Image 1 (cartoon, rainbow, N blue to C red):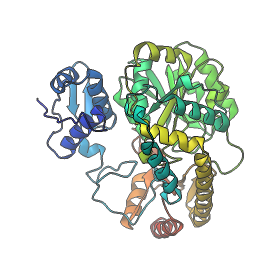
Image 2: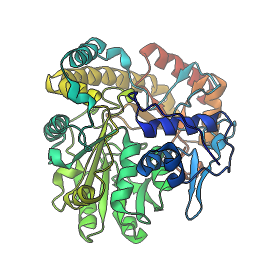
Image 3: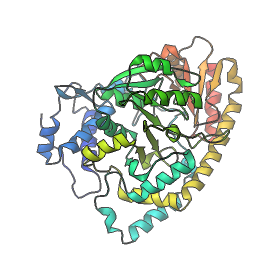
Image 4: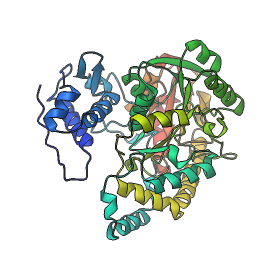
Length: 462
């Protein structure tokens, strides 16, 4: 089939983003139907007169989000969008669904943040100063890994806050973890076997599922991923969140971290992907050093994001590559341009360099700590019928039912009183009967909304 996509080559939006948004819009609008085959990346690149890697990036992002299916040896096809995005009542998504018709009085989203404390004035001032100055160079194509000044700043911040031993040369700046996952798939190679914690972050699961990877689900105990089961799985890569596992809230102790690093060091082809997604928010004790900080064999791929600490729309994440993978990147994949605007990179760099980021983080920690403590107080009556976990870190708590009520039943009961909650197994490709657990995020709620939501839940849960 032919696709008439009008690309704006003079605007600020990247070409692969324009292709991605056009196809996504066509699928969501019903103009591309389930099972319909799309042009090959080679043909579409030729028709649009863009590089094939540009079309590859757009297609891979659509695959990772479930809009397209990649069939080896056959091509790309439109996926079952209705099922993936919860347009039917039988399925719900783990994060708030864009343009969903269903409305809720209170949404306990685990991905929302409190924008009430965001320093809009400071961000606006930096933006204005950068655009007002003679910064014509920022409109030229920059370093594919991200601007050197930002990588230097992030490197220093990670060393000071997380104990990480990461040089600016190792860092790659990208627009969200999904892009970095796609780049990582290129570096690690296809047809690898990857181990994921059970349960895990649904977007990571879906991203790896969209690659030509064999996925092993590794059970967890109170210390995190079971290394004995990891060995038995035959996996070569392990994706973990040791500092605050999502969605269980488990913090991996030093002994288990050493076991995991020992497993990785046993074979050359083994690597650990450490997703340090919300390490800034810990409310008890000292910050826990990241796994990368104790890696002595160049086995840890370190991922982080500013989405939680600043705002999701900033879309700036980073990945630190161990030396073996950095060499592969430099030799084969530096042709991928950075997906983050250089203006946004400069704003973030100055925001951090001038101390605004640290002050903002302190305000966020204070705000979230207050919400965290208030939610624990409000949840006291729920302890009769639920086990409450995940305290002292992050922006959500978990409630595990002591009776036989399933996640689906708990979600349905909450919905009946206008409250949206999220099941631990959702988007994980695992049976929800194993958990009977829901997640309650408090980051984006006011204290009034939190109380209102829990009052409503008490009516149907207690």
